[in-house]
Amino acid sequence: LIDILVTDIIGTISMTSQGSGVWEALVLSVFLEANAGRVILLDEPAASLHPNMQHRLVEVLHTAIGQVFIVTHSGHLLPTRADRLKHVYRFQRGKGGTQIFAGGLALQADLQKAENKLTSSLNVGNLLFANGVLLVEGATEVGAFPIWFPYAGDNAGKTLADLNIALYGVGSKENFPFFLRFLMAFGVPCAVIGDGNALMPTFINCLLYTSP
Image (cartoon, rainbow, N blue to C red; front, side, top):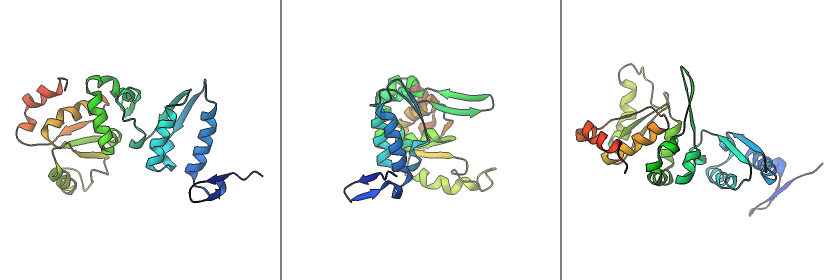
């Protein structure tokens, strides 16, 4: 028998005592060592990796010689660099079948801003995994809506999390148009909840259909 040993700053531990994430990293390293001409498909590779390792995995895969496809529900595996967003596709199942949205291609005028937003907050990337997104202005709405929502209309006590609806505070009304463009480009159903002139069509349309 061959006992694989893993050595780090703490010491040396047998591979049999390691978690599944280390095992998966070992298998992946074997494939990547000689992947020229290969197509590698990784299904949920983030399942056993902590966030820092997920970010490291993205960087390693970008150096791979072969072609790599990743299926994920982890915002940590989304690229934050503007030039890599064009390689992100969102799949949405609907009544007529599965739709594919290439948001990065539709956001050419917004790539730098998208990079800044994705880099500054993981929550921005996580919006792409929601069934729908409610955009609000600030912290007051973010704190109030989860309490109010289960009692509204026909929600029957269901929370936003039960419906996989994300609530996101954009910071100010001027940020609504960018997030609308970002979510619409990836086919994420979204709505804006605000007050005053933040919801005036003249304000939204002026910024929504013009480059920043």
